[in-house]
Length: 121
Image 1 (cartoon, rainbow, N blue to C red):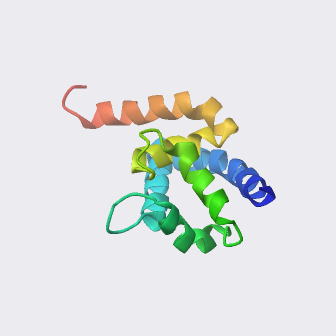
Image 2 (image 1 turned 60 degrees about the vertical axis):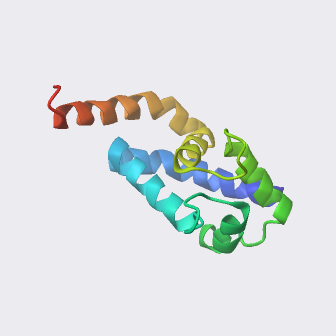
């Protein structure tokens, strides 16, 4: 699975930079955009099949079927064989140790923005 390691290493380098430049809300928006790009449009989730169809967008077109299955299984917390948008976002954070360290700050920033835009603040 050398291809996955290489792709993940490149991703890990970019996600914290994206977070720094976009802020918490911007990063979540970009992750949502990424989810929509990879998802099965009919089911509204990322499946092994939709990931395979869209793998070239990520530079992962050479991954074997079992590697794609492993990627989905890694983030599938409810066992339905697919990734919801929340599962996808959580997986992206988990794959980026540098971002995990910053995630508390991003969460606080996002929550602060939500509070400021709500009537409860």
